[in-house]
Amino acid sequence: MSMKSELGKVRGLGAAHDGTQHFWMQRVTAVANVPLVLYLLYFIIAHLGASRGAVLASVKNPFSAVALALAMISICWHMKLGLQMVIEDYVHGTATKLVTLLLNAFFAYGLAALGLYAILKMNFGV
Image (cartoon, rainbow, N blue to C red):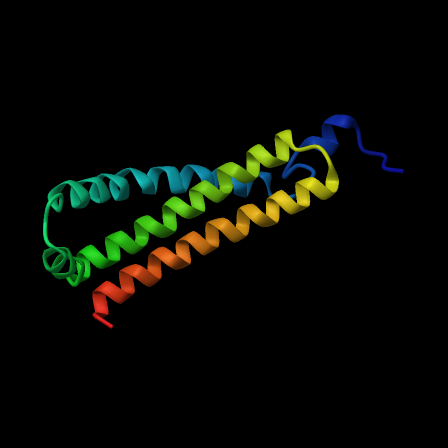
C-alpha cells in the first residue's frame, strides 16, 4: 500500500511512465511533418504526368532522396503515435488492446520499411 496522496500518484510521468515523452514526440513529429509534407506535395505536383525516368532522375538527387526518406519516417512515426493514443484510450479489453497495439506497430514500421526500400531502390537504381 502506498502512502502517497492521489495527487502525488499522478504527478510526473503518469501510470505508464512515458506519457510526457509520448506527448512531446507527437509534437516534434507534427512540427517536422510540416516542411516534409510540403516538400512531398511539391514533389508530387511537380512530377504529375512526368515520365518514370524523370521521377527516377529526381529521386537520384541526394536532397530529394533524403527529404523523401525523412518524410516517410516522420509520417509513419507520427501515425503510429497517434493511433497508439487512440487505441490506449478507446480499446478496453487487455488482450484486444495488446493485439491492436502490436498490429499498429507492425503496420507503421512495415509501411516505413517499404517506403524506404522504394526510395533506396530508385536512388541507387538497383
